[in-house]
Length: 364
Image (cartoon, rainbow, N blue to C red; front, side, top):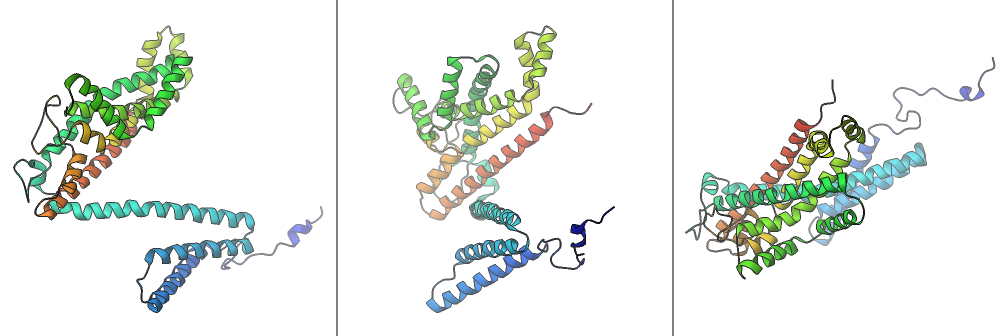
């Protein structure tokens, strides 16, 4: 047999070499990134000293990131080739976009936690704002109102949304199904203030102008929840394999029983997750509840009588109508905002846990 001439031209690479197989060393990107940031911070520091202005941390980080992308792309092109250089450039851009998106999230979280912990005490959770004009008071009435309004909106939205999605997937054919799909798409992008005006106008026709009740707010939130429930449930129902339906039909099981006993149990995890996420979507709405449920300083357990406070509206009223001392109102607003964020986080965590608990078991 002859010897391959290409194999003779390949030189062995030392184990400790910085370049192995035409690849940059593993720590090279980190070294380049650190050098770029150091150079950028030094440059901005010199400019700040020369001009007597303030040092711009954001500008220094931005210029350092741009310099890193340029340098690492040039180095990768020279050593690894154009294809690997483009991969490193895109990876750097994606990572930079992710970090840039995390900046406001982290900033908001730190600000809300730092300002909200000052009033995260027992009084805040066991008292209302009745007869409170300055310091003290709490948001118990807003918590109860949020719980009742959101619960009523869920009771209204889930059956309507789930049955609509079942119709679209299992029965819907022709023009009616297309019209329903179009209307659901339109409702998905409807502004929340429009939902509030719609619910207020409907109840004002029967109860007169100026009506403010918790059930009106629940109807407004249900207008926002229904399209989310429909869309999420529809996608989950479509993921159920048709073989399961056909096997049920082959055994003589009617269609409605197949849906109840086969389709829904198979997709219950995704449906429950979608419902929990729709609740998290509307629990922080302020504009529709400000119009429909109004605001009050007293406890109200009746959805069908008088005004009812909610946490988002409580945050708005405490911030917008500051009294004396102003810091007491701001502390209550920040504490309610922190509580609202914790509730939304808990709902998202609960949705993930429910999806894991109810997911179909794949083992034997």
